[in-house]
Image (cartoon, rainbow, N blue to C red; front, side):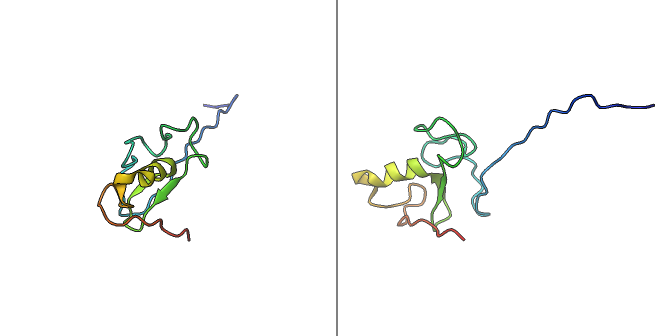
Length: 90
């Protein structure tokens, strides 16, 4: 049996690399998948990056910025209520 390939349609997927302890694939604030976008964005990717705190909870950058700007948040992580500080990138 001889097989010939006439056309090839390459496809790909991408996803954000999350810290190991963080098993959630959704933002803790808007509950939208990280592979999607936050409610403020149209397209996923670098325009809607992830922010990971020292507590290892991950959020869309726009979601956590809005959360921290609210008077009632007091600069605390919405998941564990520890002081939210962004992890340094390696």
